[in-house]
Length: 142
Image (cartoon, rainbow, N blue to C red; front, top):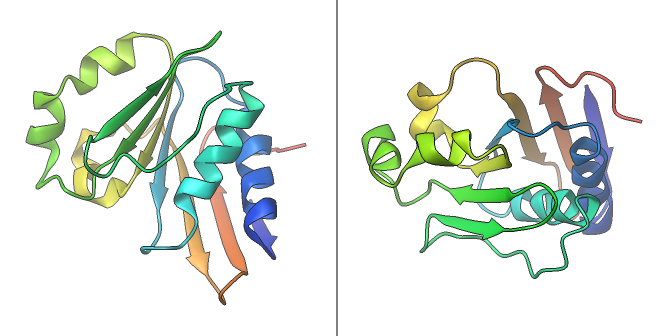
């Protein structure tokens, strides 16, 4: 599925639409250059999950936890050197907690994925326009 957005609000709305289709245990592997809109997309996911929190990129903390009816774990792998570091911070424990995981900079830890994750690629077309490609188990976003 391909979605074109014209501004940050539409990118958030795309994240919201995806989150409404997810079930506990889902992993969303996100790809996109710096400033592509990955965090805006995650903000939309959090809104759809009715989480009343400020979503920011966890670049320096690696993971932000947002607790609600379904836990939401927002990972940023930018500073990791590989999946060994990810497993060192308890990746498997997060997966077992029955939440939803959104993972920015997934290319850094691609060998940690099982192939069951949903892939979101965000391409920056201009200062405000984005092309969002979603692949995986969720094929139909209402």
